[in-house]
Each structure stands twice: as C-alpha cells, then as structure tokens.
Image 1 (cartoon, rainbow, N blue to C red):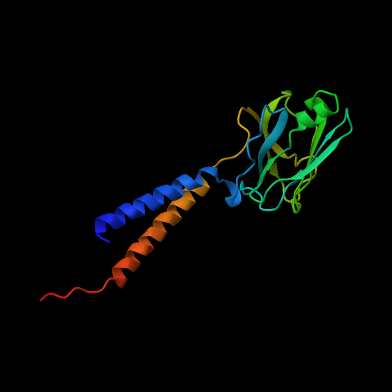
Image 2: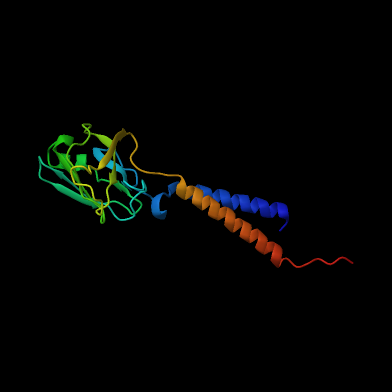
Length: 195
C-alpha cells in the first residue's frame, strides 16, 4: 500500500467512524430516543452539583405526582446527570384529564445530596420543557431554608440531549487508531535493499 492510498484509506475510515457517531450520544447509546408523534408534556434537564457545577455521577431518582388524578410516575435519569420524563401529558390524557403543571409535584433524589421537591413548574402544559437542578451535598452545613436548591427552567422545542462530546471523542480515537495503523505498517514493511 502506497503512502497516498494509506492516507486515503485512513480518511475514509475516519469519515465512516464520524458518520457512525450520528446516532450516538450519552454512554455510547442513543440518549432518550425522539418520541414518535406529538409530545404531550415532557420535562428534561441536567442535575448538577451546586459546589462544583459538574453533572452528578449517581442516578437521579425522580417521581412526578399529579395531585388531580393521583398517579405517580417514578423513573431514573442516567449517570452523567441527565434525565427525561416519560410523556406525562399522554399518561394523564389516558385517564381522561388534561395535564395541568400547577397540579404536578416533582421530587428529585440523588444519593449524597439533599432531596428536592418542586411544586411550581412552568405554566406551559405541552411540549418539552427544560428544568435543570443544582443540588447541595448532604454534608452542607447551611439550614434547609437557606439552602434552597437552584432550579433553571426553560422551554424548548427540542426533546433531549445530543452533545457533540461523544462524536469528538470517537473522532479523536479514530485518528489515534489510524496513526497507530500507519506506524505499524511502516514498522512491519520489509526494508528495501539497493543493488
């Protein structure tokens, strides 16, 4: 294989790996696949440590309770601190009611952090709504009243997380592997002798 064809093969391999990362996101798997059809009411966000500002590494255990119908929907986020609720609007609609954010209780628990109970959610009753949290560690010395959890709320037409970090990491790994293959080919190639 000549130097030019090796370089071309390397570029094709890198391009194929780059395109292969399009369906990937968090943890090497598709993170919260896009819902089919219209979204009723979905909450998503990031759970971060209030001190470091980094996503929490433990699972976030979340329960959403509708006070009007009495249903509770428990679920868990993933380890890099992301979460996405099931379609709460569709679940409540199946019971013959309309989703009312003013009737929802949002309870969040992460081991090692203070529990959060959010009763005032955005008034928007349809679509995907971002609600992110900054949690205080349990060992924090401030009182419960003074250590109100920080909550960031925003509406979004999107419905999940598709960060470029896994694609960039995969690209860099592909470049590194290609460089190793090229060096290996050079070392294995027999030496030419001049007559």
